[in-house]
Amino acid sequence: CALLIHPQAATLHAVPVAGALPATLVAHSFRGDHVEVTVAVTGPDGAPGSPVTLRLDIPTYAFLQTQRDHPHGLQPESQLFVELDAGLMRVVEGDGGIKRLRGWEIERLRD
Image 1 (tube, one colour):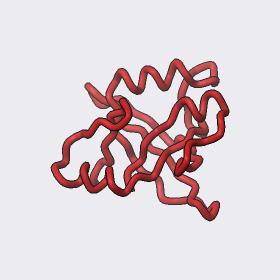
Image 2: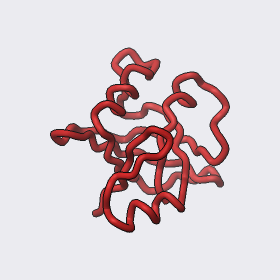
Image 3: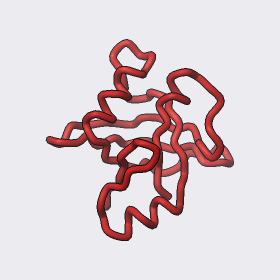
């Protein structure tokens, strides 16, 4: 599955959008022109899932930082929502490029 981060849902504590699942930020690191963000997603049954690493462009990451209610922005254990989208994952895996969906650029990194 692909993961689509919804910072508004997490920041404003709004009702998650349909299909969004709670996630916990595990780690993030700068890699030149992008940021790698690792999140652990809670499954629909409430069971913790395997951590998944996403690649965010710098503007998206900066926006997430400014929108967080934590005084230092995104930190390990920050809570956010992600949307599982199998269709998007097929597109991303198809050519390995970053696809834009609803304004967010995401890519699941290969092991």
